[in-house]
Length: 136
Figure 1: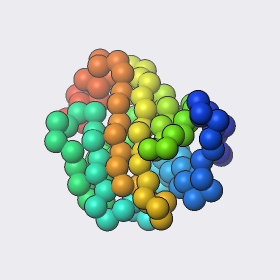
Figure 2: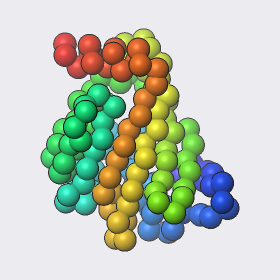
Figure 3: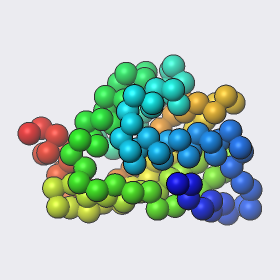
Figure 4: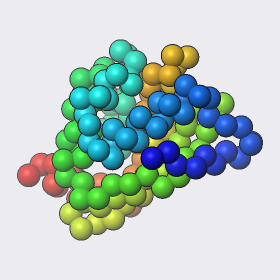
């Protein structure tokens, strides 16, 4: 299930980081939300594409993602990139008939736990559909 690494500076994911990213993708593709907290640092921060204020903690993190994925019609990872300061996973999906492309910007601690996630999605119309679907 692992996808090919793309890294502009020629580096590779650390084995621990790659294990986390592989499990991250498996969880999201299979929607195995019970396994997600095991990948997260206790004080994880989540910068969602729809909230101005970041969410903190495992419970808020998992609840927000479960809500989003409950309305996604399709979702797949396309590419990943690694750098000294984190990892970026590109994804594609659809909601309410609108397709979107996005990225997860992920930071890991030394133990391989996710400490910070920033999600960006485009186009804005897909976010509006997500908001409308979530409100229903």
